[in-house]
Image (tube, rainbow, N blue to C red; front, side, top):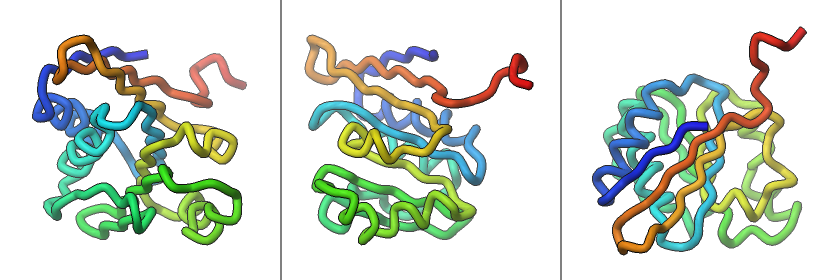
Length: 147
């Protein structure tokens, strides 16, 4: 697990950008954290790290935004998802089988539907209003010990 500290929205975006530079097609980033924690700021950084220059906004009402260049990137917001039917209707499962990078806010709402392998990004608010602790771990990744 990697641990980062951010003291501003810009730092959160920079942490996301540095992480985004390491992503490749097929990677899934599951973001966890309470409202206002900085999930969208982190995703803006991810997109920047991927070379995406379009404005990144949270897809709270549309559920998903897709960006095509320079890589295919899909940004989900699962805040309003309440059922498996909701997941099917927003094509969530289709994207899991596509050649793209996926970032998913409010992953705690769909934990049972997350892929077997993903990066978990937990953003925690600290006592000072702008301060954040960001924990990034790999779930389901096979180390050298796998046969």
